[in-house]
Image (cartoon, rainbow, N blue to C red; front, side):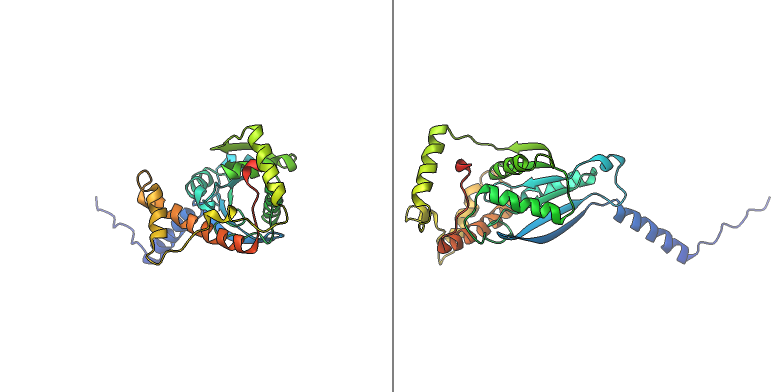
Length: 249
């Protein structure tokens, strides 16, 4: 029997097929959108990790997760978690606290409740009605405030790295804060002002604080966050603006 000639492959068809596969790959990849939302405390920066365009079936019933970072980090703390959870079908929104990351310094002194109110504005702007909350250290306290103020919108709350202050220490801190209310920050308050050294040693100190136990790439990200935090904290001190300490919550 004669052997039939194989069909001729048309170059154009091959390219079209590849384009189709490329489009499917794009649809199966989580996306990250960054943005700013204007609030009474200033512009708040967020990172919105969205599931693939063709999500897994469970994504239809997954509530978005709002992630609130520790001090002195930023939304970058949840970069890997956001990618992983979005790939599984859950939308993850990580927010920079006022005075941290790429969010503005607060326009005035504020409480953790004030910050929680700003976060609900971020959720509204992004079209998120109901959500779960994850918080780390200071983010946990803001998350608790958010959940308690909007119980009809908050599902589960997960707090990590929580710390506890005995009642007597809380009472003492509140009395000290009351004594300073309406006054400029004292010299003691300014004791942790970040001093910029001409030889750059203020930067090497930040690097050295975690270098013994944190991988270099992660340390670099933490140092970048802390630089922004300390620079903005210096600006707040100069303006007499403060953010409520967690132990007053």
